[in-house]
Length: 512
Image (cartoon, rainbow, N blue to C red; front, side, top):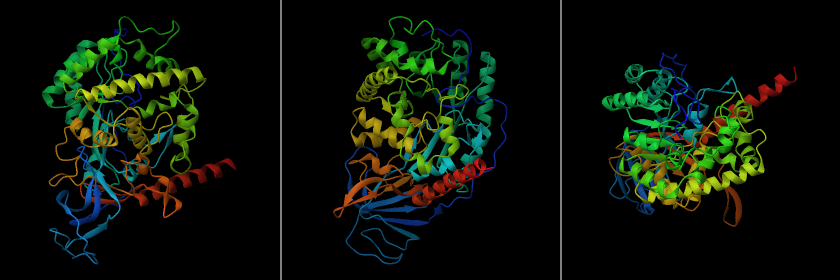
């Protein structure tokens, strides 16, 4: 676990390296279709509050500006027009959403989402990723590393807050780059000055780690880390005040009885080796030591963001390559980026064997058991997708991550907590993540009960029986971000149009 004795800033499942020099601010995406409403009434919804409480309803929810102003039991009074009163909530209203039979939950907080403007060396529409996020009820995204450049992401965060682009609330983190402790401190100060709201750290050398963590603490910048195999492990990260541990690297490392038991020919910089064998550390770790590691993480208030879904192809590659939403929602360059190519990060599934899949299924079982145990001990567990890599599509991947939390043994109410209020806690957001008066109006209105079936959150919906007939139903109907109403189906239609146009261009080019 202490194999690297030099400074390394590495590519990971999280992001590409972000250097400290200024990055050009990209052109903004298309103008927002979100409707800013003065007084919005959401009528007759069933409410999942995100705090772990049972569903209540039907309820009427009044949104005034950016906040939830009131939540009251709905009455049986029919309404027509915008001035009707319901219960103790009185009009006039600027807009009424009839949510009878629908479910309202907090907007999803994806704590590990990467804004990407190109894949496989080809540009993508700049709001492709944003629209997929919003179309799945995702209202807040932490971008760990800001791979498109911290200046671009700070600018897009501002444009989103001003409702000038179709995007969730964006929380840009940046990655420092330094060779010495003094350079680390200077890099942290520079990133703070440029608007970074936190840091994503990969630096391996202990003295540099210590310096940047100390400087970040002084400046109030939270740190998320992907520990890798290095001289420091998660126990050191906890001591340094790191806010969140991404994936799982550094946890089993801290519980090994000796060095990692990898094949003699193992090469960390060969991603096929790295990802083929990484999960084996769970089986090599000592259980009693792992238990103590979890206690230390919890005592220091660390969040564990496991990002199960981005590794799922490792245990079932055939399934991953044939996901049903790829047809209508995956741009050709996104699919191309997924295919094996040693020059691209995360594109390593050449000669992936049955033995690899079996081994990773075993790894998942151990990994999930320890995540569940961490939550049982009071540790904070969140939902992060890390989409854009390894057959893992934006928006859809966040929902899949929630499903894997349920597979790990969590009740659907807990899964929704992980995706909402736990995410808010991890990011230090005091007024979002719960459906409650006084909180931000960050909401998802869903056609179907996600507690019964999380699949209703997928943009493709779910095959279900209604009135004796099989129908494709479900999906988020409206996403409300800071009181701004987005028609989720219109966003999905926009994305389908992007994909159709891109495919048409490809077909035309192929005939020349």
